[in-house]
Image (tube, rainbow, N blue to C red; front, side, top):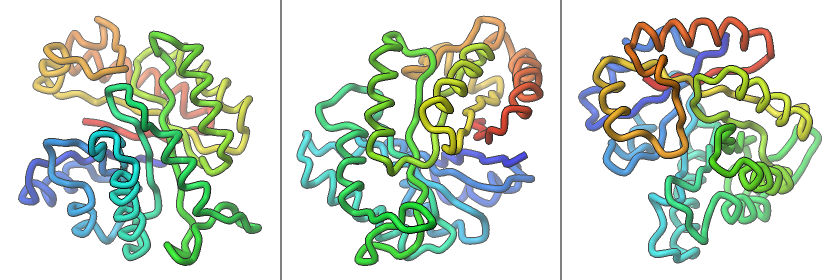
Length: 248
């Protein structure tokens, strides 16, 4: 199974201990969190494994100044160019709806790409290696029709190569999402986000749930209950040719 783990750190001293605790893994992903160690800086210290990184528009918003947002994005692209093991950029809007969002960033990236026989390759002025551009899909949105239409607009840019199904323990919703995505783009890579909570992270989630994430009362009972549900879901999902990314 292709295991990817998210790493969220407050300081660099935690890095080696965190990596050791996650073995075995095939890939590390660095989210873009406002109060954690900056993911671009952290990426420099992870050189020996495949690496992906998130660009969250809300964390680079600059009051909606698109020029400044793009300037930040270009820093990510330049970093990707210079770090061989960094090959994926996940673009998310963030927790609050804004006039500048994932689709604006995808439209910008679309102008920076050219297609060849192997897929989408960034303009050589930025980077010559192929970059895996990813977006998220929420299968339990309060307005699912709107979420689906926005998702279709993202795919319409023709540069999205990977989809992350946002965290949920509802197996039926995940299966429906996989079917929906594959009907739209059969060759896209799908990664199912899995929350593997500790006792402390469950308490934090109950106190302050993550926006857009819906988990059942049974899942939130205890880490043991969450693990039982995850194990059941993973056994079934493994048969559907999907990847997994674990948040712990």
